[in-house]
Image 1 (tube, rainbow, N blue to C red):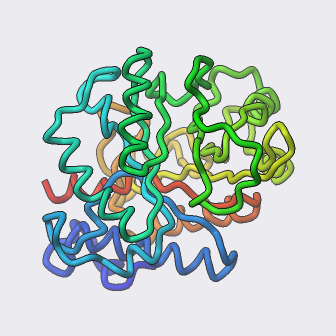
Image 2 (image 1 turned 135 degrees about the vertical axis):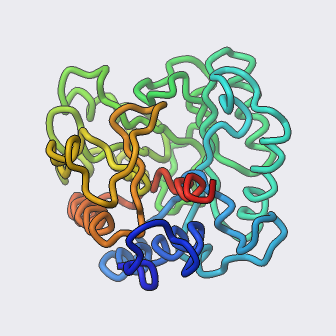
Amino acid sequence: MLAGCAILAGDPGALTSPRDAMRSWIIEISATVRARSPGFLLVAQNGEELIALGDQPDASLATGYLEALDGLGREDLFFGYAEDDEPTPWEATAWMLSYLDRAVTEGLCVFTIDYCWSPQNVRASYDRNAAHGFTAFAAPDRALDVIPTADPFPIQRSDAAITRLTEVRNFLYLINPRQYADTQTFVSALAAVDVDLLIVDAESEEEPLTAGDVERLKWKPGGARRLVLCYLSIGEAEDYRDYWDSRWTEDPPGWLLSENPVWPGNYTVRYWDPAWQAIVDAQLDCILAAGFDGVYLDCVDVYERFEN
């Protein structure tokens, strides 16, 4: 568990900052999973400010954190920050870019998700991200339950085998299988998409993906290898997961806090609490056992709720 934070019963307080707590935990996660599976990939979504030790983009780098990761994910960089299919305010984009550009310079891959669907915005998203060296996905629905069918998806299609994150030129981020009748229909739809990287959820509405399902997803339609990352929220608990106890609704454990008003069923957690970290550890065990190439950590930026 997280050294220096496990003793905290409430907010991080004076012993460590919320940023330090998240940064340290991800470093620990990285060390643990890579000891078991060398080459296992870690990408952290949002919270890109964690790459620097201060509160400004030119602060000293958090080298241990950078070494713990292979990539960063970022939502709403150019479109979708305030409203889907609307340009993100330039001030917000500039702030995010000040960290993301620095991350690329330090050798991390950056994957962006812009929520847009109009043809001009989709094209602008891909072009603007490419100019910074980022790999983009223009998601037509924030629920991440849709495979785009119109050009330019997927961009830079290739028959080449992909075995490293640096080789990825396109990806599909689809974690909600609600459009599909069952797990195998969902897996078949994903397997047919000709992209270098898939980011999927280990659980479907009916049953978890098996090791056989994951193995099937690792191959492009033409037979070349690709990478498959598993989505995992580490900053919120979700009431549709196997670990959820229905009694928590009336009698929540101390680490479980308020429901996210934007995403019902998702609850902020005291992520430094050993009980929550044990739940995440168990999920990581399942992800490793299923044979995923890596993990895509979401809600990393939950630390902002404790700072504010």
